[in-house]
Length: 182
Image 1 (tube, rainbow, N blue to C red):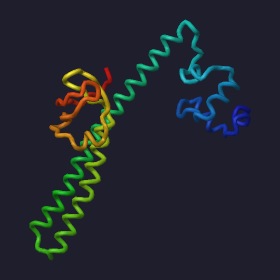
Image 2 (image 1 turned 60 degrees about the vertical axis):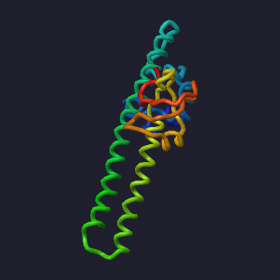
Image 3 (image 1 turned 180 degrees about the horizontal axis):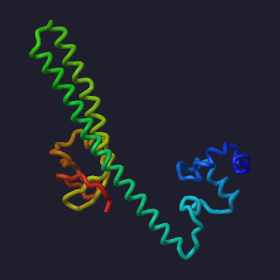
Image 4 (image 1 turned 30 degrees about the horizontal axis):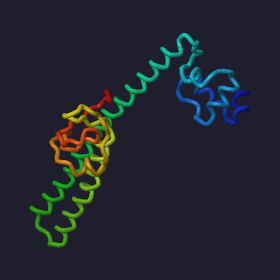
């Protein structure tokens, strides 16, 4: 309760920190570290890190962060597939209904346009996810980079391989999607 009063928060929030169910808000971390007499590195590691172990612990934290990013990118790329399939199913079902059921022409038009709107929005989100999750690797120079949305959107592609210009070597090649930077 005393720590909560010093930081201006409830003792329940501190209890969540102690149990590992939540982390302190980033705005409170410096003040919390000052009160406890530890560094932010010690707080994030959950232990006091000596200078001998500092480099080792820092490297391990960086490796863990890279792994978390790669895992998140894999999940985002799976979400991209779900969004693409779902928006395509909506489009094809609306077009199918408009093509084979008897109805007035204006209703057919509304159904087809109604199918294209979620399709275009869904594909836009899917392309955005593909652009930002992971990297593209140039086949000519092996440079890995995140291209612009426009270059991904307008590039010829087969699956997750796109024909784009590399920003490093300037050559146009079929560039594959990869998860890691190395």
